[in-house]
Length: 413
Image (cartoon, rainbow, N blue to C red):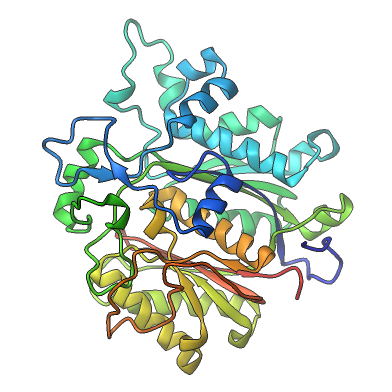
């Protein structure tokens, strides 16, 4: 069990105290986490729209139980005023706050903030067509809708805004939340990412990037990060929210913590050539800012998209940053199980790393069958393992040129 937050941690460190998650593997963080540890796949044949003209027929749909959860938690009027990604964000934020055991009435609402990251799926799609006069169109399609809704739900009066940085939008939200807290501009921040890009139109557009996995009779085995026969990723819907707090705030309420965020690195390189250079720089910046020695880092939650270029580049970058230590690292890719949730992906990776540091359990990279001689590190193949790591890196790298690496350390070390 994680110990209480103490004065041991410097003020520049930020506590992770709550997690909320919705993915193809479950409608709560505990359910998703359990299924990840068991190495289950959430990739299935797509049934929510006609796939006859789509380049792939598989993806990560949310569980059927999500509809019931949404109806139980979202008022009918609010439902009409929001799109799916906003509702996912609201539910994830609510779970994260509950998980953190934060007493809303006991905190200064003026120092509580919300940062939401999305690629733009908060714009209404045809799948959410409303019959008759659409009087809620403006408030439903506002780009800041999710952040505003979450702030109103909890009465937060601090910063509240939306970030868009491609598939790294949620990761960017965490980085900005970290900055707000360490610069004493907020005590508590909900950082959230959500996207609902599993649509026929989006799949057709992605075809040009040649990044989608091949259709297969067994969809659960389609995504193969770091495997020699990898062919790409599947698009998935999902969301994740985390509660970040200053150590001072966590101390005052004697909070339990998952992990401590100690720094991040960010670089923008809008070129598809030599992505490993940007990946290397991102990790180096993160480690340097954290003040943690590389030797204490034992786990990397990889970007691991399952594309030929990305996985090879990430492997090369890890070797460059860690040298001989690279072969001792544990590296796993949650996208092998849930697909690419875009803006939610980095937040999910962050939550997975935090839970791994707290529990001592590392979820696997599933579908790893044929080793690639050029990707020769320990990718925790197919089965979870136990490991007592002092620190971890979360990588979040995108096709759109944004590169983020986040550093977490255990509260037990």
